[in-house]
Image (cartoon, rainbow over all chains, first blue to last red; front, side, top):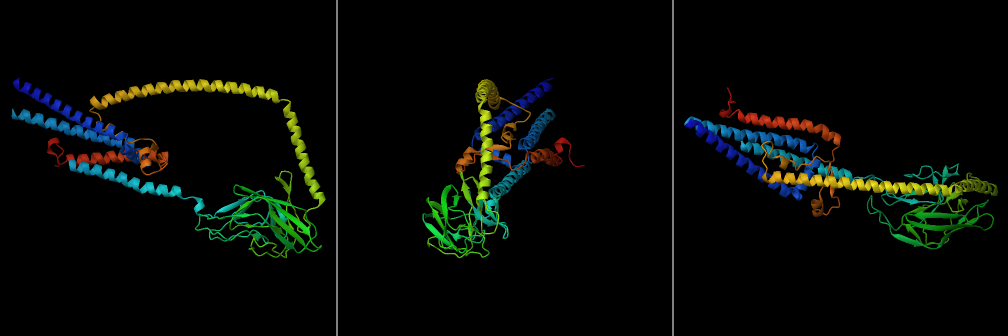
Length: 90
Length: 389
């Protein structure tokens, strides 16, 4: 019973850390985006967009989904490793 | 792995930059090439009578009529004179005088044209007189300038005629151009004469000029090569034709005048309805615009709140990659001001068909490559059970 409580606490801690980590990443990305979208850098991105022979919003959107999935997988694996090691150590 | 991912992303970004660097100058270079780079400059003469041959180089406006059927010379109401890129002129026909030779194009595509103002007269003694029109007038315009030239025939001794060409207005003439009179002579006149040498004498056949009747837009031309260009019957026939046309126009105007008030009332009613419709349309447009702006404000507020305090497990990079637009054109006011360009809007050199066809292909390839790298990386990770067996 005590092991389960400790395991649940570890899981909750991992979820909190994961949430804070992801929130920090999203905040940083959002800040960079909002700061650069109305600047010349945003115009450069726009130039790149129109000169590419494909729709970059779609292609890069797919890539971003893939990268997001990869990040989620890494975090999940980290939580899995952390909880597994915690359970085995007790 | 992080090194591999960053290397992959870096390569992709470098590839995108390379595409821009390669295609942007190429597209710009293609856009700057025009036909004027390959064809010589032209100077247009209008509303004048010119005698040219049928093989006028680069000519596009010559449909007036025949001048000399034997030699295939034609009167032109609107002529075109070509200036070669090397500065030489191409004669239209035999006979003529050279205006000036002081200028030469400095390079193909760019003409350096000094302006000469000629206000004088020049006489030509012709070697044969059998009949001609008295005081024929010739109108020329060069670019935006209009000049009036009178050409007067004088019967000297029954065997020769003197043609006096007088420019009454200050005539702005591009240098290096030639004006030609139509002649029925079989012998070509020397191509170049000094315009300031008064009373240059050419022993040539009878020149024939068109005559201007009325406002100068109606004219007729000689159609034989006998040396007698026009006779009274021919002139009267043309005048009768013109009078018939004018009478027809007058009758049409008269028939229209009876219904003028009714037409005006209808037009006024139509204008009132149009104005009312425009006002209604503007009101609807303003309402829709306000509604759209309200929706945009709400969406922006929602997006701002999500960007600052929200959290999404789905795609945290959506905002970053959302900077890439899916429009075919993009505004670049800052970059345009930096490079001192007036083009603040850049459009894609690719057609929408190309982009719409390539987008799914490249999307699939990109995702496949990405997941391929991911699987390749995970195969070396023993934690997830994808290790090599």
